[in-house]
Image 1 (cartoon, helix red, strand yellow):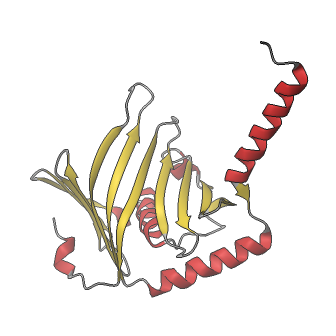
Image 2: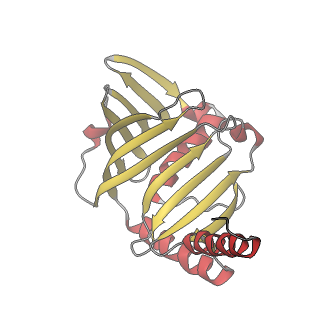
Length: 211
């Protein structure tokens, strides 16, 4: 039995309402309250650890590449991404340098000597702590659903845009902390990182940020 045109239009309208209910743009007052909450939480973060699962989407692959590991952060600027499955790979951001350990093969890059690396370093640390709402650096829009806040940041710096077209940070609405990081590249490939098992302000020695 064929549906008539009125019924089809009604079903489309209902679907659009459901989609709109899932993610709505926040108004100015909501945005101010949210930013204040995130900044207050970020100021209280001395250390942070999470387990993570990362999905790398490449257009030419039928399935996303999945990796997992642990992330450590210690203020003001120590950050470790340690991949353990399906391979061992770690990146440490420390003292203006990026230290990479690829299953025993080590390499160091000086981020402080490169404007673009310095920006990426600041961006990654800011995305973990949630403290990156810089209107001078990004065009930012804010959205909400029942349990989360989604911020979408478009870099204003032309050099950074060559690497990252947009950053999406998903926050827990109650705790104002980051749950998910999504980096969209200029090629439309993207990296999505899901953070879980969060531990705030536990003791982390500086030695943990050595690879």
